[in-house]
Image (cartoon, rainbow, N blue to C red; front, top):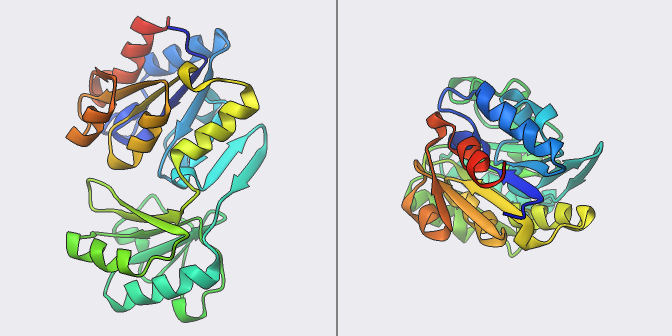
Length: 249
């Protein structure tokens, strides 16, 4: 296959369930880079450096596309504070546990260590006086009823995704994995048909739909598998690396 760019989600895709990258997967990614193929992380995480060896990648897309890191530069697509604050207040009064992320800090209404121990940089704030833009707003344990409530308070500049584990994520309408990949592909003069993408969850569907070659994990949800051209092995069995070894290397 004529692939010039590999894009992969992290959790339950490139990462094994213990949140590690195997030596085999690292070796395959390095071999792809030696062939001149660009490698990119596209994750909902705000801090992929916590779990991923970033030296394996040419570009990093974080917060579902709100942040793009490439060549020492960063591009942000944020929800303005004037629009984020009313949503945060409404969700807080609804009883949701929330974080609003900007610049590596999670501004929150609860102690995140009880739910997300990997988050070290957080500050408990009063959302009524919060004055920061937001790269991503997260709500923990979102039920279908909660999702309906959040949707009713979104502006035209926002969208909501709820992951399989109930994590609700609100981003700017232009902060998507597909838009971020399009930005990097343009910089690197790579066509859509030359992009292979891997994912497992709802926030990966627009990425898979954009890429010329789309691959769902064996452990992906059914909606993701339906959107993909191929199914690879699951995340605990080096599915991404095996597919690349067989089809690229």
